[in-house]
Length: 385
Image (cartoon, rainbow, N blue to C red):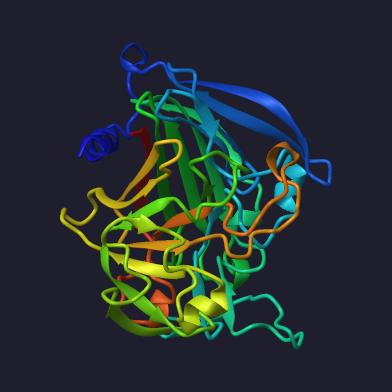
């Protein structure tokens, strides 16, 4: 409840506040190397009054670092990542730390039907070299692969950083020129607030998410199978072993996908379930339980590391949370601090809309039209027990 009230208060404070009323969260900038083509990259760091940092970069509008205290007050960076900007750019598969769009998760069939028009979407080549019939995370060159435009801003949390991207008409096959902004705020209550806003000049679809991998023991400190997780969802969108959405919404009861009460992530991860076996773990979309009015924040999930005592509570005004347990994280590839990556070294808690919603009329609507504003908020609130 404490985090929910704080998140609602922050939502009311989206407008810039007078300097005299701002909290003391401060923004600093520092050079952070360059991409392979020589493009220089700046690291933007927000520091709260406790000295805890959260860092970002414009490539992929990415989260690079989030420091959270354990039960003894010791800070650790709890998001996976790399030591250089170039490594993020070359890491296309795991989507570590990036902002994902224009449509996060999957779209099937390659065709998008809107207002009587049909649009052919781009997709990665399949094993036979032909385009795949599914589109993952916005296409081969989706928002997570782009260099966004940074802008320091201020709100009731203090300093913040906003990244903006103009996606042209036809980008990855999607109609309409879309202007998207994501603003990251970091508060004295150890809340990382992610605000999205978008407009379009033609009818299109949108589904944005943040794709950080969390390890509350610390980035690179083992895997997350002993983390406990609770998801406030009684249903999930059923998917076939190849992750194709059928349109069915089914109960989590008596399935390995049930996180209605907290349990270790690893308890059922090896369950005799075809979809689970095919994905080597959880790769599932949950229909969130709502107890608030549409557009208001609600608690979506609670992640807890018993060893450190760190807790991550996720609030969002989105209808779904996609759970991915890092089943294909790059084993052996050096990550932060030169530590080799490992399977399930972090867990992604991706708030957003349902996979394949444009092709499933009974799923919540993801259409954005000219003159409308898409807005969304997710709050990642860190605490310790």
